[in-house]
Length: 457
Image 1 (cartoon, one colour):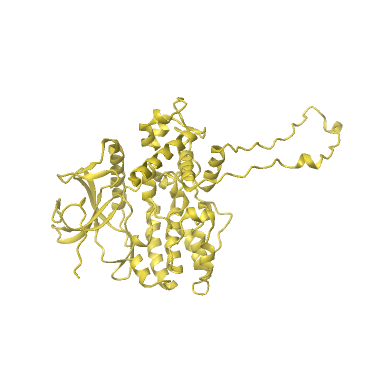
Image 2 (tube, rainbow, N blue to C red):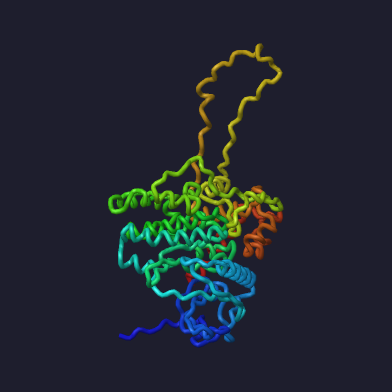
């Protein structure tokens, strides 16, 4: 039976011209764009071209241009377009044998394009499907070059944020290359739909479930460790939210001892810790783990502190280049703490008896032992458990609340949640020109309800 080539109605037609490039076929389609196989008519060679076309925001017009789907989404579309170009500029600076090479980028058809080298081979996903539980020596040969490339990416202040078997390409000569840096993966800013689109469950750590989670090199290491987990166990890693309820990763890795070396398995487990502070903080630290070196508890980490109040400058010595990705505190601990505030379970701080400064030490009466009942701490109420949606929303709110006063100003709302800014009056129930956590949760729930209603039609 003859196979048919898939037709993509939103794609540029075959033989369409983009400057000196001529479209030959569609290579792939994702939530934020399309990738084409094209021919460079000047150099007579094939290239891959990625087009910014976020399917939830825009559509192809009859004249071939890309237009926002509605006036309401125009600001989001333009913001994403700027991020696409920003990412293209960053990638174009790299010249590394194990990072996909971006030769040029340009704007056309009211959108933007990246021109990349076209690599021949197959994704690691296909290789893993044909060889479940690949030998450790083979995995190390793939891992080392990828770590070299990732170290270069991180040194430039950039994060991949979507490492998975599909995005590690094995060339025909057996060498790996890290591809698809997910241009404009933050294209919708604080919108929930963007958040769900930018992460791949199983490979995304908890901090990626919050718009402004504490992301850094350790985020990419978690994802790459998830790839190795799948390679050694033969099954996809469980998603981070599921692991909060019961973590099966350590047991699954322990079952492979004997087939793989202890340092290799331990390094994978260490990089897959749910708490980002417990992971290796950079490629160099993770390489030490693969060599069997135990973590040094006295070694300073690179975890970025919570954001400073608006207008406060950060000391130059403490700046980290990956702050462009909103590396600010939001994780499991923060989400749990916000949940406690949300449901009214604030705890009273322990009170110490006031010291009697006017009484000379010599005249002080001997301290009498207090009854046992007085030493008994106040009974603690159980922490409320938040579902994945509520925990994510709470972390988003906390990250945007720069001065930690429990509410968002209009400026903070505009900066982080453009969708809420457009409906500010509706959700500002008490008319105080601020959005409380409760009001924020109501907005997110309203978004979720409307999406579920659309799906049910």
